[in-house]
Length: 267
Image (cartoon, rainbow, N blue to C red; front, side, top):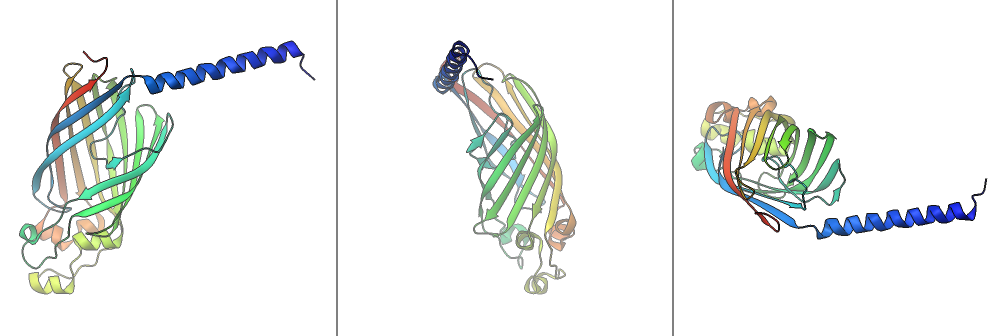
């Protein structure tokens, strides 16, 4: 059935009005005032994967929001990532991480060192329901350990916009044989020098654990940001003679930072 011209004209008018509204909304979103929250403080992290000691390092977090939108949630244990494709429930983009080195002064003579490693890869976020988010990363070491590592985390996020936020959830870390050999393997030469048995780990899950992240605003500008994380080395990593004799299967980390929010419209 053909439509009469007046109905077609009305539909065209409504469509053009909707398109103009959508365009003006997009322009308004782009022009909305930008807010930036910067958090800086100390954190304690394991000296290297499998270490029984922790070291002090900076905890830095930077997030950006526009207009009245709350800051997007990011877990403290995530790598640095830039979303290049984003919807209301999905985001994907490149990821970058820096894995600290392992020195002979930390393990004793006879154990090979592992240099500081630049890890490059990608991440994906999926919100199944607004309180529950899945985060996954896959990164390749371009130097240092030279291995492939993947991390998967599921978070339950409770919040009152930007006034406070608390998130908690499980974590799983996987890696290939090259990564596990670098940190958990014992070569024949290392065995001869240390008395440890020769050990050749494979690939698979090497850690399971949990992470909690929290923020709280004292004022619109000043707040605190913190996290606590526990990992348990499992599988071939947990059975490593290096971990059993010189380190620990229990990996603890945590940090606390002071945050400051700046931008137009903040008082």
